[in-house]
Image (cartoon, rainbow, N blue to C red):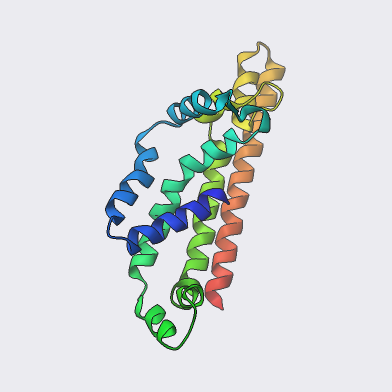
Length: 190
């Protein structure tokens, strides 16, 4: 949700502003960094007083958003570029407010693209390991971290539980992709 909102706003600002290329470079920069580097940076920046966010469990969603925002932009931006913006101009000329004019022009195609971008961001978040390895507390690990912890324990039972948990993650990701695909097909059929 966070990545979708920030990604769409960033993609819109790339199109709307004179400094759109600079906005795109800044927004796409996390693609060049590993998630572990982002996690370490967040931990060092917000993991101690005076701004200690680790106790609020906000850093992992923030890190997942930073990892997913460039992907959302990469999915949304081509659609915004391909959409005829003259519909927004016409809607404005006919008295529509800017928000209404935007949704008149971009709304129909943007809904489907946002669904795909949100699904991609959710899949990335489900499997993200690098940043979470720095930010998760021992009592609240993410699924990938729990899999690693189980694999580090000796014995077949731990391995079996790790394999089962990995399958749950795979099945959950596949179900999410299928749900996004089905919803997208349903919206396209309308």
